Amino acid sequence: MIPRYTRPEMAAIWSAETRFRIWFEIEAHAADAMAELGMIPRAAAKKIWAKGKVAKFDIARIEEIERETKHDVVAFLTHLAEIVGPEARFVHQGMTSSDVLDTCFNVQLVRAADMLIADVEKLNAAIENRAHEHKYTPTIGRSHGIHAEPTTFGLKLAVAYAEFARAKKRLEAARTEVATCAISGAVGTFAQIDPRVEAHVAEKMGLSVEPISTQVIPRDRHAMYFAALGVVAASIERLANEIRHLQRTEVLEAEEYFSPGQKGSSAMPHKRNPVLSENLVGLARMVRAYVTPALENVALWHERDISHSSVERMIGPDSTTTLDFALARLAGVIDKLIVYPQSMRKNLDRLGGLIHSQRVLLALTQKGVAREDAYRLVQRNAMKAWAGEGSFLTLIEADKEVRKHLSEAELKANFNLDFHFAHVDEIFRRVFGRP
Image (cartoon, rainbow, N blue to C red):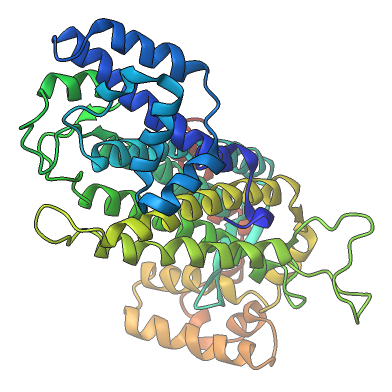
């Protein structure tokens, strides 16, 4: 995690303090269940809670012990014993390190997912607000980067809203997928521990019981989780790239807010660059980069090896923290985005009416002209307009073959911009539940 791209709330989930606190809660809940089952004395379970609940775990001390033991969970348990006293011998009965590590990791991933879901909700609130603001702001739709037909800026944003609504569902599904607990012992057989202990810990930690584990929780769950983060990151990049394109000097239909005192270049005082959107593209690349190692973690050897451990220590904090920062940044960009309706209208008219070519094509077919012939008639005039030989309407009006079928009034009727927006209300109702 890099402080520059880290928000404190998400960082707290991955802090050493949080990790050790979760480890303690897992061990203490397990002790409660064991006491209830008569596996350990009830007094011991109470002592473990009483001492550990108020303790401030000494991270430096745990690290000192780990330098000798070369084992993080053993180091923690040794430090916990220093806090609890003799009753600590009843901690971790029949459990293995992965019972603690995997359950903790999943708790952290669930908490991170909750924060990311909230981030998406805030982003979509900003998108919805701006979409309704520009519901009928005409702009050009582009395919292959080339002018196609008119749309509205509100519809562009509605597309993003629908995409992030799907992102929220994916994150919710990922949260459910990874919210499992395993307290099943060395190879998942419950040989040294009762399955009821696992059920108790799962309930207390807000997780579901893993139906079957080995020494670890199956990593296909985690692969799905990180893949979902990667898809959300791709959606961030798509919208960020749209903003970058719209801010290009030759387009300038929208641009990021440029605050007082902000500098765009150390050399050129005139520069106003889409730096936030560019940054979002880079952050999205990093989140997606974590998907491949998560997929590779699925294929562990036999009941477990340790190859996934170092990977998850990095990708867990880094991917969730980066995505959290990116979602919050994108919400800010959308909220303050400067929109230029006049530039949009200017660009709409840039090709002299060519954006209405399909309407003329269809009008000719409605008059009985074969589609291939209609296409030829429209295209030959469109290419002249493309070459700057006049406006498309003027050229098409002067085409005798076209005029055999369409009057001047009928031709002009096909150049009405409002025609393209007849179903905007319906689309908004589909996306937002209201027009």
